[in-house]
Length: 400
Length: 196
Image (cartoon, rainbow over the protein chains, first blue to last red):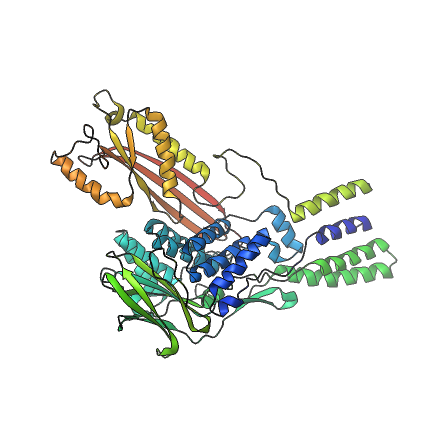
């Protein structure tokens, strides 16, 4: 290899920029101020988001907008994000960049659990708009996303998505689809009594509950080439609902996003190994040997190849892509409720692992339940013992 | 020789870092940003299907008296892809209105109207209402309905999605199916990057 060819390759690799992976400004969110995070995300958007991070940025904005009660904004950004997530393949330029550059230069399309959550949120928003057809389509889409993996296993164990699909199908008069999906939800989360015995005709309100903090993705191992998820310990385990002071239901176990992130079906993944790290080490060691042999034999061409391999190794970035949706909850749950039509006070309490209400972590909502069977509420426990909710009909709900 | 290297270097750098230019394309053309759902080309093809309605004897035949009214219902979505059913209905309606030249009246209906329409059908059976002669705000002689369904598979990083959209024209008076047409498409592609 002539030195000029070597130079050519090095400059081409050097042309690929390197920067820290995108991470949403989640500090206000952790303090119970999702609107603050939404404002900061909007400011980031005005400054310009790298195209490869756009879907992630939109997903983060969607989660923040949901908690801030801005359903229109949430729908808009999550919809735009799903268009990117649903795009097939990466461009050849992206693939070329990712061969020697960072994984994070590829367009972020999320891990399966993140795609599931994008679909779930969109489904919730369609449902609250009264569009059960598209809501069901999103839940189906989420279940398909749950089965996506490079290895090809097709496992659908996102019980809450199955339960929501079942409920929506029942409301659309698709009894067979509803029965199948209720069974699937119960099979994947056998600890949930509501999933086993949903009684959709006896309940007119479905509450989607989110608790805790979603898993964090970090790079570990040889050259940081292994992406690994870590769970966050949280006190909250569910929510209890009281109607005008009378208990009407508790959310049970739903879908743990940490488990979703680290498993494909029943198989636990011990991080992701990248061939690039092995190449990087191989090129370095091989380069040293070839360069040494070239110098020993006074074969300067051979020595140049060795030096080139060493430089190539040094320029190859094997670090795993650690971009992830930081505003996701730790667990998603769903609980059907029976609330007579008309105005009520709905009290929501956050429960700990022993099923006791955590002191100071509750909130009263004034609800006016429509005389229909397809009401859906959304609740999420937040930082500093806040509870965010969507309980009106496409109304903005201030967070506490 | 050096010039060739510099040219190759420039090409590599451009390829590595990517570049894009906005260009205008025909709406029915596929673009590089594809998914396995309905694309603009599908919507255009579906709308064009509606032209076939003009040949339905019950609408444009020599024995039709008056101007029949067709109520276009939203397309029911039973697929795994959310789509703007209203946009689809608008495209279909536009095609129909332009082709009908006033021989047929079209009205759109949302799902909330279905109960009302069922009541109207009952009234028509009882002879209390005849929309061809007495066009009312809710009246219709025929209903155009559409249902989208799909069969999807994922595995080994690939996704396949077959979509059928069935259209039916139903006589409002007796529920008789007078016209049926389908649009079908199947798309297979490598699923977007999944990092595990």
